[in-house]
Image (cartoon, rainbow over all chains, first blue to last red; front, top):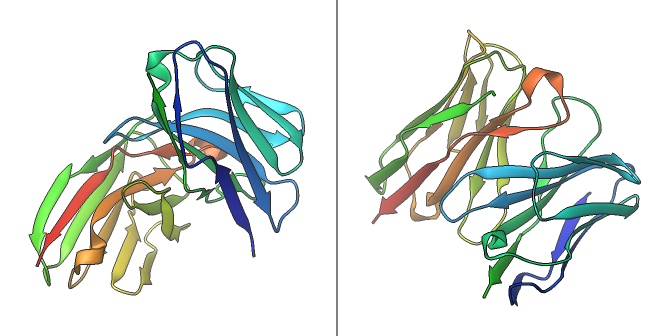
Length: 113
Length: 111
C-alpha cells in the first residue's frame, strides 16, 4: 500500500528566513504530487502540482517555489519567508490521470514570527 | 473560475442524530469526492463517486452523486463524537489532474 510522509510537523521561523518542507511517497511509482496551503478554518488552496520529475506547475503567484528532484520526493521552498506565508501546508499524491482521488499527508504547521 | 459551495457552513448536533450536508457546483463534474479533516491533520478520503446517480456507503456514511452532475450529498447516520471535524467535497475540473475543494462543513457533535 501507498504511504505519504511530510516533515517537519511544526515549524516556527522568523520573517526573512529560508524554508524547506519535504514530502515523500512510498509504495507507488510516478505519482502526481501536490502542495496545498490551508489558512485557519478555511479551505485548501492548491499551490503547486507535479506530474513527473522536474515538472512543476504553479497555481498562484507567491513567495514559494517547488521542486521534484526524485520521482517520489516533492519539496516546498522559499528564499525569504513573509508573515503571510504562515499556515498549514499539506502534501498530497494521486495516481496519474484525470479524476483520481488525492491522498494527503499529515501536514506542516508553519508559523512566521 | 469554478467553485464548490458547501452547506451548511457548520452544524452543531447531538450524538445519535443524523446529519446531511451538500455540495454544489456551477459546472458539471465527472467525479465527486468527500473528505474528512480532523484538527491538525490532513484530509482523509471517505467516499469517491464516479457516476451520476451513484449512491455509495462507507459504514454510517452515505454519499450520492447528483443526477445533474452539479451536486453531491453526504449523510451521516447516528452521529458519534468522533464524527467531529470538517467535511470537504472535491472534484476535478474538466477531467484534469487537479481538484477543487469546497468551502467545508464543520461538524460538532455533543454527547
